[in-house]
Length: 156
Image 1: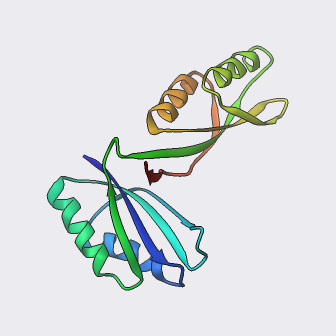
Image 2: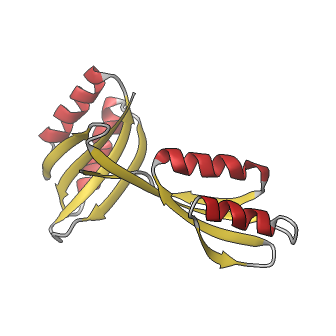
């Protein structure tokens, strides 16, 4: 089972290394990781998606709370939070396929951010289901490059 954790930490040198080190030292795998400052410049939020049963999740949370510079750890329960990811995708196109890719982007409310003679760069933001559906439909086109942020989440 996948779990989304929000870890509020002091915005200091080495904190991310300690958090990630805890995961690798205990043999926990990270599916996605996102780190950014908060509205308070002295704090950062680390959003981590992990896989495991309730026992594994409980152990991860306990270990995170023991770390120096960790202020708060929250487990986002499905339905009680909102989450989003962003993906940039460079799609190879030609004169025939360009309009089809543009139509797909319109359907998914994806934003075209760069157009070249042989490619289109698209930005799409949404929940994991929307992102995966969009990328699934694009499988028929050559994906030249892709960058995905990982999940961001917030309590409703």
